[in-house]
Length: 89
Length: 452
Image (cartoon, rainbow over all chains, first blue to last red; front, side, top):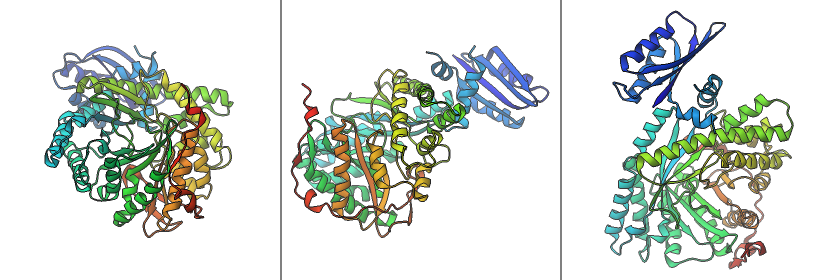
């Protein structure tokens, strides 16, 4: 199972480091990252394998949201299937 | 890797444009609960509902979390109670209503549907007794929803039932007068009622259904309105395409949630209801879609055409996205539950007659309309008769959910709270159809019902 982690907010030092460190601690394996910075606005999308998470997925979602809030970022973590079903036939 | 723009589009739909799953409704058959003993009957009903739907709310919340899509309501619909009560007296029907209410509270769901009767051709004795108890049942319960089907294209219209329902609605308004006659907000009169509708107040678990089924109702008026806004000044062919594409995406999410819920609950998937169901929240309105299409205000001339096109495009877009489509499937036009409708009413642009015309091309009917408390019961029966005629003649579902708010008149406001919303009371034509209504009997089925 894969999760899509989207991170948006004001650009700052260490955003990718913060999120990827958290993922590593929890056993989520990052398999792809795209990121862009438009003026001061930062947008990153990560695809992570979550089969070996050390905590329940719902807790992973909550903790990432909280991590985002701490750093003034919006982090949404969602099962990849919602995007696959919506955008692929 | 999934396209970044697609991901951001989905997130934007959910966060900014109010995309949600409006309801996961579990349909549960109560046929095997029947008993001559009233205590056993109620115990069977309670045990079956709370057993089958035990994990409904929790499973809904898990799916919500995992996929990041809000699932606003988790609900239960049951076999029409008039078919379960059998020879029992009125007081037992009331006990059944209280049992349903208790089960809903145990499960933590906000509505349970199925205090219903199907009388399009005539009344069984049980159905007659059950309908007589509707006002009291709605007054002494909080979460029970009731519906009565009084007409179908195949059977014609049972005008005795139409006549009766005028009285039932008035009595329900009286018995719930302390809460602005809210009982009437939980009572729908139908023509061509669908058997697998997941939306309240008209949901029940039909006769040819599985023992248990999961039906899902999607929503997303805000998403459609935003897509139209972004399209700018394109022609209507292009606009129809944009609506179809948007409806497709919305419905795919509904199908995903329905499949997941069905797997996790171990209950067969029934249908996805492709609906644009509004709420009183800003940015979640069907009326505002019509205005985005180019109307100055919903209710002006052109509204029926715009709604017809919207309704058709929603179905065309949604149908390919789901393996089984059912329920009501189309655009809803409730008044008190739609911020844009309320605005149109307050602006004096939306009248009852225009709403009636709109129901010929939308998915349901005259829905959540507050009318003066002193409206004569024959006038309410007249509203029902007109609405059923539209449904029967057009082979579509129509419905009436009007609230004659006790003690209040035109222009006064009424608030039902939550998703049921608020509205000013509509001034309506009060000239009497009494002699026509009280003739009783049946309006014969139309010629085009003879399809064999």
